[in-house]
Length: 80
Image (cartoon, rainbow, N blue to C red; front, side):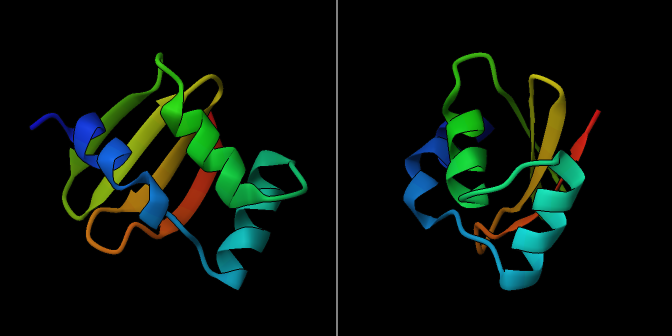
């Protein structure tokens, strides 16, 4: 099965930690619900998902989102 399909089938499991919220907010310059922001970015048709090692890397618009492939924890996100 394609990486993106696997991630989309488990989108409800995607979450992050308190530290992750702060890191992602700062890195992307956003406020509000960072998990919903990242989920919505991932769900976009034009998002590209790669599975490398233990993580999924979601590239969309001007950012890359790193999600652990076994726990579905958003580790970080960065602007490209």
